[in-house]
Image (cartoon, rainbow, N blue to C red; front, side, top):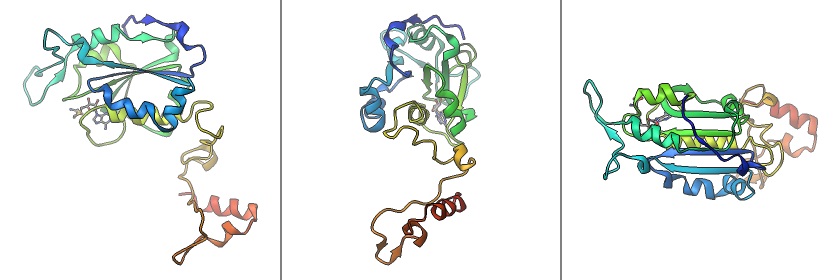
Length: 234
Ligand code: SAM
């Protein structure tokens, strides 16, 4: 990783994590960073987003960001120059490179898991590059990226939704982000569930059109309820 970003360390006194996203469609993140739990975390300054439009670093008057691949073939590739320039303009919030992770979203990356989300939640800063077209020039990947992540074995049109998947799963693990502190501890894949998927849940009414809630959950017997829940982990 060779980019020299400007350090803005003073900005993050109370921020748990800073996210910088490089994308050709930064407007896709507007609702994501505004609404629901993520929006509240932004308002409470637990997290901070910097959205960078790669087009701003495009070449020439047309702000070119892509070109045809050497060797031929269909589709376009995102070029080195706009991406290297964009990375030079990333305003890093931490001086410590060990507290920062630079990620490229790609179907060729390592499959994303809850364990990876927990690992990423330990960093102070994530910088995420979203690809478009056929992806990015390999030299960008070789020189600028710490880690490549795939959200699954299928191909989307761009890295924006994958970046949101990764950020959402990381953000909800950060201290104080979920309303009830620690409420991610009993989620699917957690240690508490031996890595298994969560048991079924029911809420009122106890009888909905003849579909009944299991008696044990209405019994008030906490030991039996806990036993039933463990037996019904999936
Ligand atoms: N040519 C690439 C390939 O076959 O692996 C696919 C490129 S895809 C059309 C464009 C961009 O979408 C990728 O550069 C990546 O950023 C993003 N993308 C698509 N599917 C993804 C996935 N499953 N996980 C992560 N990113 C993905």
